[in-house]
Image: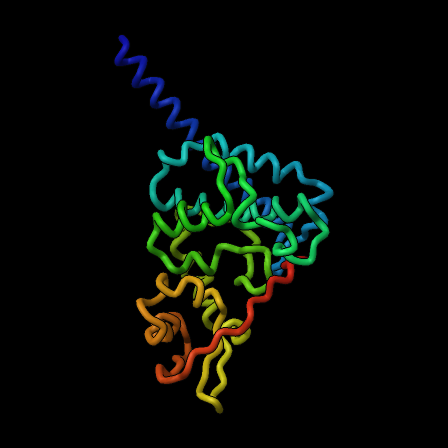
Length: 237
């Protein structure tokens, strides 16, 4: 009898966790669809009506993250990072840049389940340390214009790989993100590639090889790499 009750409890719990995670992805999709356009965020509108964002973040705390499969977990953390970033902005809006707020990424902690995590902890401990996938750098959006643009929808477990591929290809074929100078035989790239070089390539001399995997027109591998300054201006509509 005890075994039956325990099994029934586990089944009910797993169904609840599954329902909560499905609700999270669907509500996140509706939220991003409403407040994101052309890679920019309508922080002013969210500030005026923050109930849907607060509800989403409360829902995220009811999800048993450790029980999720790998793709669901990765999609969850990507969406949550972007949502918490937006939450951190509207708590202090209007601002011109996330860097206007001391400790925005590395000091301010956010409740996630039974943990309190900074944005840097989510990125480095929950995503980069658990998933060997450099493509995440094209979907985690830090509220600055220097980031690849945020999409107006959620990342879903079943479509995550295709979404990661699409956003990576868009970024690496964007002339504003990968800036070629054929006359000088140079390519200027985002400082993202400097900060996280090991995620993309074992050494800088091989970085162009990684970029070319997603390029429609390959960059000559003898081009010299430069890094242009990161634009921390708020990605505000």
